[in-house]
Image 1 (cartoon, rainbow, N blue to C red):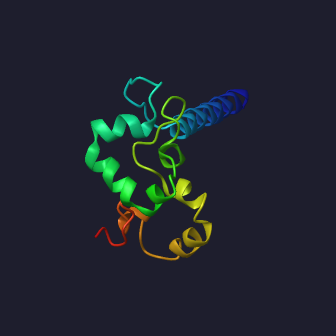
Image 2: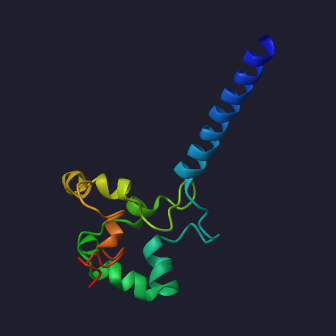
Length: 121
């Protein structure tokens, strides 16, 4: 009987540790490519990915200078190549509550990530 409880304890510990590891990976996101961190997101992306930068600049978020880090993280500690619905919900909580009632999987099923146009127009 002691062996059973010991095995059970080991299995539970392994599950807890693996969930902690997975959670840590998800909370940190991916790694941003190495860049000159003295430059702002806008300085770099206006030259490196001008189409993406222009889409953002002409969007409602660009109009109010809504920073890249709000959706993508700071790039050094936390980086999300694609924003997450949870990050959208930080400002759009009411819309996220309504969204959860729909059949869609992500805000990005209907909205382009940088233009934010509805139905990916």
